[in-house]
Image (cartoon, rainbow, N blue to C red; front, top):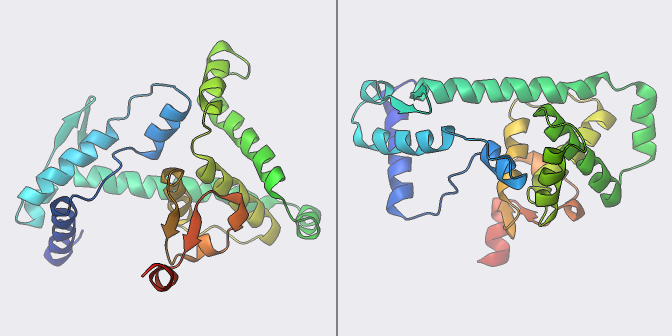
Length: 229
């Protein structure tokens, strides 16, 4: 928000969400990942976001909103905190996904000539899970690792999210196209879709995905209206 107009638009949107009793999933992707593997990693970003939203609605000017401070978990959260966090997440995702640009030409050719299957995506998704735990410092086959995998295996949460990340990476390796700045966020949205029947979005990234890899159905907004109303 860089103007009073932008502030009023966003404040109004937040107030409307609360007034309509829309169900909000107050969990970040980090929270969902922690729960999926029973890691019990505290995430103060979520309650801070909720508290900040409630305080923003009470303000009347952008200056007032920018002066809000929420103290949680030893950190002070402001609107600038979340702006920087959002930019950092985008930078990190672009840097990570850009690793596909170094795929050798012969490997790209192999991927074009041998399209991946749902079974292969499931295999690579399991490898992604191992890498995620390793990135947290959890060694493979350690007691903590075994507990995490056992907990995850009960219902395999985040399946759509992990499948999307895996399929996106394979597609990027095949095409050689650089990642979009918002692609990481778009992939992250699917972390909330395991118990959802329909995912409504006009973003092209979802239209490129192979539907049979996911438990949720992707629809553009106009298609949703024509099919269900």
